[in-house]
Length: 390
Image (cartoon, rainbow, N blue to C red):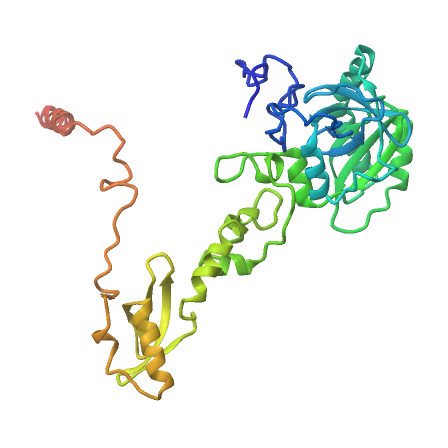
């Protein structure tokens, strides 16, 4: 999603705001919320909601109180209250929808300690802010070199400057607890700023940095996903996916969040489905479930003594046989219910790459030309042998 001022140039960078996707109009930012109440006026006598949502670098968003009754709209650059000094951010949401977002994030709008908005950012504030943003890449590189020199087992993934340039927050990931007291001293001496270290998880790291998933789209966590629900391997088992960690893991190294998207539908379908460990008692022998297809409502069974031959049965047929087994009744065989029989001998594997060989793209060799060359060589050899004998 892009704004009108951020059309892509030849080098892949935005031509308008030149902010690499973090423009002032908030049209191509991460976690953008559409204000569908923007064109509606408030009832007579009702004051607008005095809290606004402000976005900082990447996906960090916070709520601030507009105590000065400033006329703010989406995309305005404002100077906000910080623990020390001030910060600079972009307004992403105003009006009644902010109340909904605060309720969703479990933030009370009646809290008196809610930080304030000082003013709309002046040109001087914006110049200092942009200057600090330009230094982040070089400082991140230098801080990594210091961490490597101290032999700390941590990864500094991102740096965020405060709007006034007085403080920098370093986000890092680590497997174990890290003693970074010496690191803070060395970085404070090298950069002459106050340092704050903040440890984040691997999913939060992917959310901040962004990227392209295996589906070809931007990562869900960096575009619209705001909560990280736990994902377990049971989600893959319910959906009958191969437990391959290379395919199931995302860029963060954890299981993909999208495994939970269709899980509820599978669980609803499995409520009326026979269990995977169901055993069918027949006079011909016991049959075990080898495979199931929830969408087609089909199950494949094979006899214990003949596991190579699979018999496809409908879900209702399997439930009928199970009910008979509960009454201590056995069916004659699965062949009387079978929809389709699959045998290993009848399986035919096709060439999915192409019906030709792997060198089908090579240029065909000219057989006639090769035969002429061979005949010429033979004739020249015969002439040389006759000349020597003569």
